[in-house]
Length: 135
Image (cartoon, rainbow, N blue to C red; front, top):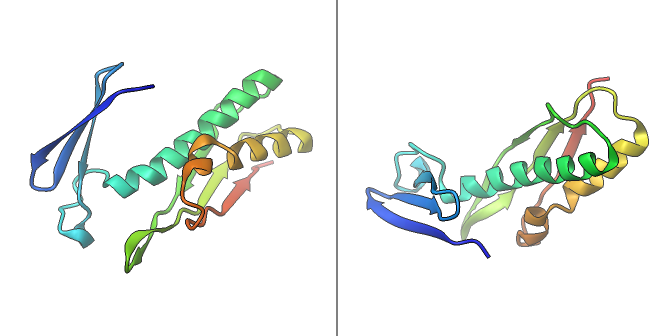
């Protein structure tokens, strides 16, 4: 169990504090929903959480299997549905480092697709994942 605290600071901004580390994230409503878009929006954080969870889960599996995934990156695009307003799609492109053999690629891709955030999101949200291998 992890405690997180949220405080509304005005003008559609919130300050989120991670109690164990005391680190802070600020949010703002997006421009298309009465905000100024000065920070991540709450729904932006869903996409960011997915991308970081995919990379972290692949790193955990990679370390266990002796695979190097350092340098992998993920790009996510949040696509909203206008009515009712909600996240509709989170297409994700993961660029992997050189030198991963086909068996390692399959293992890491499965880890990505089953990361805790991907498993926790509403099944109505489409999460297409594409993996790019430069070699």
